[in-house]
Image (spheres, rainbow, N blue to C red):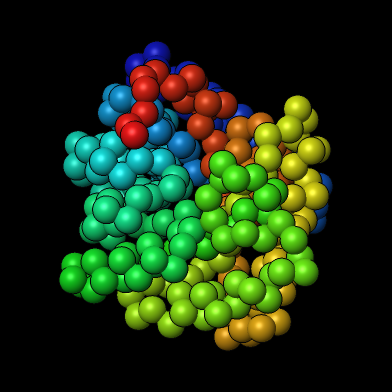
Length: 245
């Protein structure tokens, strides 16, 4: 096993241990939380090393970069590739045809394009709907910082649920950047509250997944109900090149 694989494996296993500890603290089963190893802005060799180190889910933020890795690492057929970043409408086809799961569905327009391309490809795509609970203009997602305005998203939410080739599985969010992990807690709590609000209106919906938490705050996210945490630099190290526009 190479030095790179060894170092990633050590950090990967250490992250799993922290997830397990946080889950037990919250009275949850550790296996209820899945670790997405984020390999954006990393070369194919690092993604390969992460897989060889034990990672079963890799997360990518950019469609073209992700597809290049997917095609280069097709031998690892058991690995799931998750799109976790904002997707431009013109790149929806790449996601629909190549990824196993999407965390970052952030508009009705994109949902309709993904649905059409999935239909053309004979695929269904599990998705999470991204909500902006921090009110930051720089963040993507349906606006959800003001609880009084949550009813405004119900119409589009219903339209996404009705699309035949998408399978809505839950919510995703990214809180504002804080100096401590605790800073994120109220935002994670708001996402969970929003999920409960949506379930009250659509009790037939499957919203079992919550994708919250990154390298800086994933333990708090697990305590607050995360089923996916997205961890990159804490496992594979700093990004090594500039990302695509």
